[in-house]
Length: 273
Image (tube, rainbow, N blue to C red; front, side):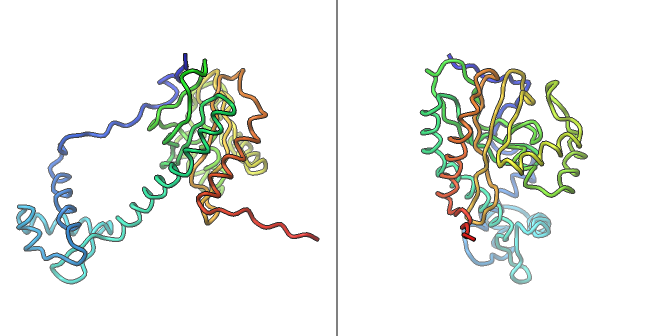
């Protein structure tokens, strides 16, 4: 049946706790957010203290720290409300959900055509995170990526798409932060080699992983753009090294373009001479 990629190559999904926070200040922050979200306008410190059971000085200290990060606003002295930072973070989550919704049907169609797993991935800091997949347990030997799994940008085809979209100083900063740690003998662990690879990605409009994250596994990826033409996700095909068919690339690109169109992206118009 379907083969699963090794745990050594890709980190498992991060576990989300289903119990109360173990750090007291985090639990208090949650309580403050719950109270602030109950009303659109500002709420007085006295009312916040009463509803959360926190001493006014404790509530004020936490709220003032949250205000530094723009998670909380102070419309007037002694009054607090939810801040714009939460709106920014909420929009990021909204974009992720809308990408997944737009991608599901085209991903399933592509999987039906090639009979290999199709993955949807997003960038999260210096890693890519797998958020959706289309596969069949009846398709024989496969490379199945766990939803929620994550891997370094420079070792994955989708990650290279995101690095190629960055300017050179950002790529160099990424290399400094991560040290370009490798997982296999094929991993790109030197900045000049990575920069050459990214130049190729920009030229060709797609990216590959040639057994760089995991031996005996190859991948190809195409980018998904939003209505502003910004790269927001990547669509990839993963397969045993000997089974990855270069002819799938055209279908992969077409599917990525279809998803981009569903998100409002329009190809630039070409003008005749």
